[in-house]
Each structure stands twice: as structure tokens, then as C-alpha cells.
Length: 213
Image 1 (cartoon, rainbow, N blue to C red):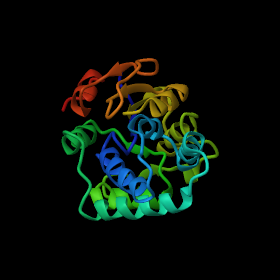
Image 2 (image 1 turned 180 degrees about the horizontal axis):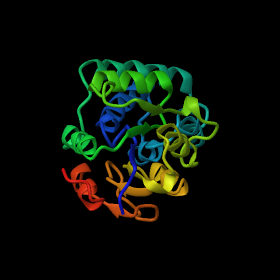
Image 3 (image 1 turned 90 degrees about the horizontal axis):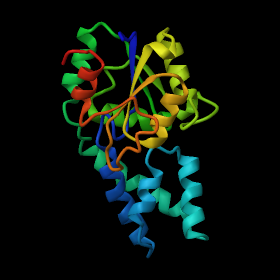
Image 4 (image 1 turned 30 degrees about the vertical axis):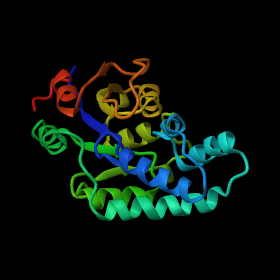
């Protein structure tokens, strides 16, 4: 099948922010005398801020989450200021999509200002004209809304678009929107429930979709 567009998730798919988030989060919780559970952190991957906050409250109960989140944000922003690493083969993958003449977009669970910062610090802001964040939709992932809006902004039918995701939450959103889903797992293995193809990296996912890298 030939595709009319490619829509990418941001965190963990294009840029390696999950590792930085874990580093800063662990430090923020430790500063408040709490150990951040790694399995719990994995549950936050792909979630919007509100959903993630509820997961933390359900697990830890009565904690000063506002203060912890402020500390966490300061820590992660300090790490971002040093530069955000790309996922393997990112720029080659974007160049391949451009050579194929396909428009591309980002559909992310980040807030608008967070997405802008991450894209600027990773050098991706010049590569995407369409960026859909949680600020643009009524329902965040795993609802299909971000992918449906991204496809609409690109002027393509969802079923004619290819999605790249790392998380289960994101893959479920793209699948529900009717896109063909390539999942490139980051910190959590794929269940394969929502992926049409599970790839080791962006390049192999594009090759599977018939886009030469």
C-alpha cells in the first residue's frame, strides 16, 4: 500500500526524552524522600499530564505532587537545555519521507509549550509544519483525536496515513484513528495489539511501508 502522509509521535519515537524524564523524575521524587517506582514510570509513557498525575496519586496517595512536578519540570528542562538526543536514524528517516514527497506531522501527548521546547532543543522545529498537541484536542491518546486532527490538517484520509509510535497508548490511538501503525518500542516492549508492524528502528519501519531509506 502506498501512503499519502506520515504522522509521528514525538517522545520516545523521534527523540530520546523518556530516559531524560526518568532521570529527572527519579531525582525529583528522591528530593521529597520518595523512590520513584520504575514500573510505575513506565505506566506514564505516552500519557498526557492529567492522566499521568492521576496514576501517581493512585499509587502514592497523599503526596505533594505539585511540588514534585515542579521539581521534575525544572530537572528535565535543565537536561533539555543540554540538547535532546535523537532516536537512531531520525534525520535519515525524515529525509526519506521528504524524498518520497509525503507530508509529515507530529501528534504528541505533550502540552503545546513542552512540545515547542522539545522540538527546538532537538532541532526538529524546522522539519514539521503540522504539530498536534493535547492543547489542540478534546481527548488525548489513547483516544484517536490527535491522529484524526493531524490527518485532517495534512489533508489526507486517516486510512491513507502511516503512524510511528513507541508506546502502547500511542499505538492504540493511531490504530483507533484508522492509520497503519508502525510501533518502534522504546522503554516498554510492544504487545502487538495495535501495531501492524513492530520495527527495531525508524528506518526498518519505513522500509516495511515501502519508503526507501
